[in-house]
Structures are given as C-alpha cells and as structure tokens.
Image (cartoon, rainbow, N blue to C red; front, side):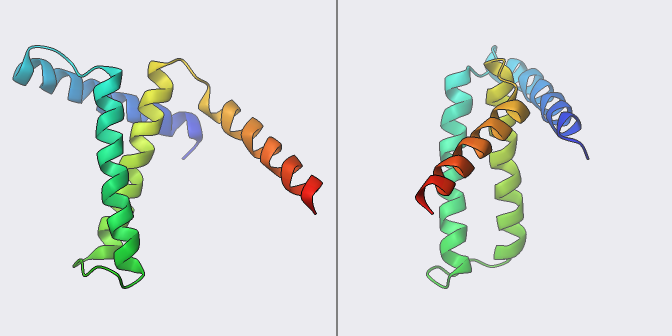
Length: 106
C-alpha cells in the first residue's frame, strides 16, 4: 500500500471516530485530545517493548505490539492531516537531514 493510501485510510477511520464522538459526546475530539490519546498509545507501546525484552509478562505480546504500532501510526497520520503537514515529504526531508548529520560524524 502506498503512503497516500495509508493516509487516506487513516482519514476514513478518523471520520468514523468523529461520527461516533458526536453521537456519544455531542462533539468531536480536538487535535489536543487526539494527541493525548497518542501519548496513551505510546505508553502502551513502551510496556509492550518491555514485554518483548522480558521485563513484563504480557500475553500475546507480538500481536499486541503490532496493533499498538499501528495505533501510533494512525495517530501520527491523523495529526499530520489536522495540521496540513505533508508527512511523506517531511519524513523524507528529515531522513535526509539525519543522514547528513550521521555522515558528518563518521
């Protein structure tokens, strides 16, 4: 799947969440609330990484790790769309910058 397709799929799911939020709460989540949800997902991710390294005992850790990484990606894609950031372009530019920094250190 292409990056644009991932972004589109994330947006489709965001729209479904927005409809559910309006029904449940009378409004949709703000970008801040989406970011707070992301922070919670990152916390869950850290626990799963610990489990992968034997520090925690979490059943079905591999499946849960895959799910949590996908949740985190969804949040990043959703926030990028909220702020009208071309994430594919920003990612490639950032990788170029990191590569240049590494090259200058070697």
